[in-house]
Length: 246
Image 1 (spheres, rainbow, N blue to C red):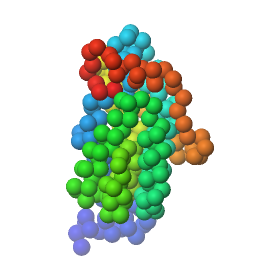
Image 2: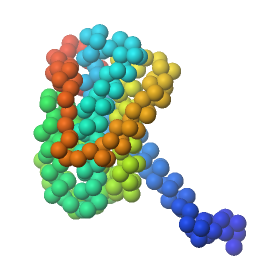
Image 3: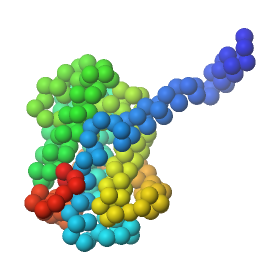
Image 4: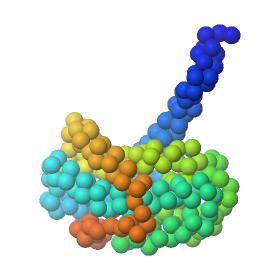
């Protein structure tokens, strides 16, 4: 037996986790969370463009404040925990539950833009995952039969299909959202690359806290209360010049 096989066998006997499996999960998480995932996330600012255009956000500090507010009072208390519920439904192969959360999340979208954002990305993610055979067949059939599919629903089902536990999935989804917000800030505020990396480093702890809080959140506590974000989205619909679709 060569040394590589001996080390691998020793690792299994000692009870240490299989590093190859751990590495595969990490790469799957990176793939799912990557901005290169072809779902069009780069074309949406999540309501950030209008406050930048209107002068409400004009520097790194203001961008940080906006992102944290949305993270803690909207994304982290509604979209992120809904994604986790989709993950749980997929783990149980419960199509009815998956579709229920899909309907509820779509109903929570308060403007045409936020609705269009989740539906376009959800559709793109579903097409990608079904074409590559990533989803359980029963779940894929149920989602394809639905008239509309929200992005966090497909993402949660994919995270479960990739064998990512809840904590890992929540952290990955939060990071993906955070990175998209910061990259939108680079174009809109605008910010330099160093400032962007500083924001990502500073806000990564807030994203991690939001991920853990989302795991512990009960159904009755789900919700979003950011009237300013809704107003920004409404005003963006008639904004004269736009870089993003939301």
